[in-house]
Length: 289
Image 1 (cartoon, rainbow, N blue to C red):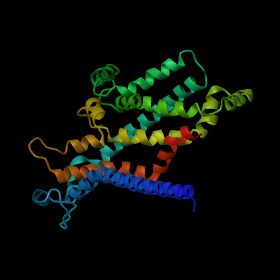
Image 2 (cartoon, rainbow, N blue to C red):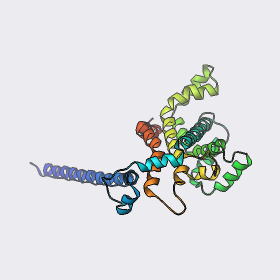
Image 3 (cartoon, rainbow, N blue to C red):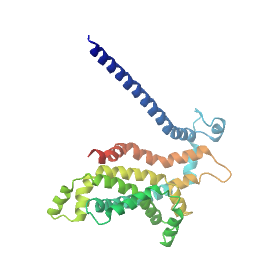
Image 4 (cartoon, rainbow, N blue to C red):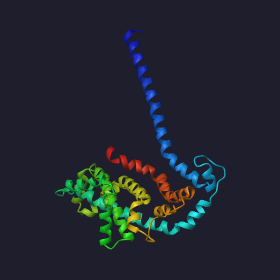
């Protein structure tokens, strides 16, 4: 065997060795990240099945003394059915309004070539860098001046406002990948702008719309700040606020709060496990078209 062939074989062996080591390092890092991400959820589930006494004796460990009394007390104290109804109404309303608004904005910016469209787009997505805590007081004053304080409408408008920037960003990225010739062909066939948006672009954009809808659903459902500020002490507050109120002024029961969190997170976990493929496909759709 020639010297060149031996050198080539050695380089290939080193390359395979480096790839193997890199693979194991990446796998180990991903396992660590997965454990770190799942541990809080597992910790909450385990503690929700402990009594106060068992939790005080062993707050971090497993136990065979399982009880469901925390869930029973949660349903008795939280009025889960009412709070669940409130969360469904406000989340569905905010989700629908933010998605439809983002569809109109994305279509106007990418396909109508409206003057100043890019400036409108930049202004909207610039809201992504502004924390909600910074504008919560003027938002609250605006909601009150509109007469929507403590109402479903006020929280729905707030959800839509905060959900619009990310929704617009994702849809604009997706719409730009759709050929303009498709739009021109529809116009030549006599289709109006509304028909083009909802009968041509929307079916094509289903992966992106599904992904942003699921992402918005998760944060709207789990949000605590906006319902606390806008709803106040109203009976129309959301499920997550009900969980927060399980903590008393002088007494905090971690097992009880854990049970409340599991009850509140159950719809989110169900939605995520059912539609995780749509989340992934929608997130990368614009990049692979």
